[in-house]
Image (cartoon, one colour):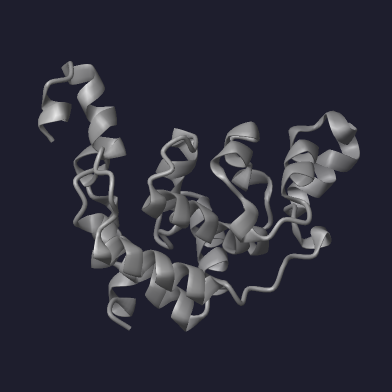
Length: 194
């Protein structure tokens, strides 16, 4: 932390968000194991289920020049565990083009990156993680988020709650106003500690 405090104030926020701790805590390793275990049995998506209906419509209208077509090429045939920060950065996440089933399928990849501190993932993807996990987010995304979370099994919800509990107690929450704790105080709290 002294290393972070010695940085200029404008850089400190990002450094806190990246949390320069080199070794993961036992709690973080447990949360990661729970996520991987809970989501490992997820059936690989059929490419037909990849894009949202609107994206399919726009792709048909605008062809392969449409951004959604690029997102489709990037995610097609991939297991969630094969999605890495480079893919997310190449298509800036691309989650807005995905179907709710695909969002539910690929969301654990982002969670694992956060646990592993793969901070080279685009900020918009990281910031959007808490929004994606919020079934009560006040926007048109609310119904989409509820549908996404509806694809999660009970074991998957318990694993996500454990992840949020770990994140709620991490230093980097100073940067994100402890969105993890806010989610635990709401929907996710009932799944905490299985």
